[in-house]
Length: 121
Length: 112
Image 1: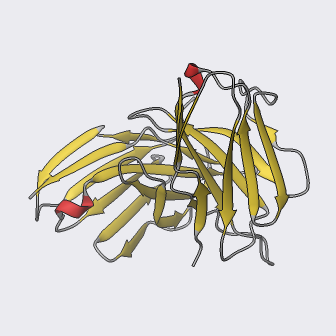
Image 2 (image 1 turned 30 degrees about the vertical axis):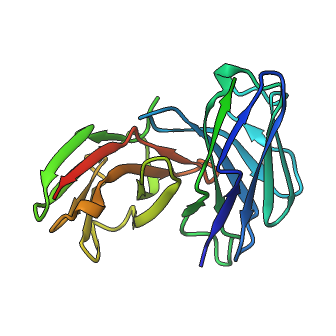
C-alpha cells in the first residue's frame, strides 16, 4: 500500500512554456502533499505544502506565482512551473502524507513519487 | 539551518560488511526517520524511531536514537550491492506542522 504516482517522470520543454506535474496517491487519501526540489547530489528542498481544499503554504524564497500548486482532491496535487527557464531545470519530487487518524497523528511518514526531471532548453 | 546532518557524506564498503551512517539534528523532535533514494528516483521510507525510543530493528536495519546528543545512527548489516543508494535522515520536529526536514544525505556504495 501507500503508493504515490508522479507524472511525467521526465520532461523537456522550451524556455517560456509552462509544465504541469501531477502527484496522485493511489491507495490512500492524502490531506497533505509536499513538493520538493532536488539538485544533483544534494538534499531535498521543501518548496511548498499542499493542503486539500486550501491554498498551499510556500517556503521562504519560493515564488508562488512561479510554482502554482493545486490540491483539488484528496488524491491529487499538481505543480505547474509557469514560464519555465533553464534555471528551473531540476528534479521535482512530491510526497503525500496519509490522512490523520484519531487519536492525534503519531507518525509523519511521507510516501514519495518517483520524481520528475525537468529540463528547460 | 539544516536540521539533519549526516556523516559521512560518502561511504564505500565491500559487500558483506556493515555500513554505519550517522545523523545529527538541532531541535526537539517527535520522531526521526531514515529514507533511501536510488539514483534519479523518489525516496523510500525505511524506518521510523520515536523520540521515546532508543533502538529499533527492521530486517538488516538497526536504528539508534540518542536524544541527549541529538543524534541517530543507521546500521545496515551484511550489506549487499543492491544497498547502493543515497540515505537521508529526516526529522519530524515538534510543532513543525508536519514538515519533515531532510539531511544532506549519505551516498553508500557497496562493492560486489
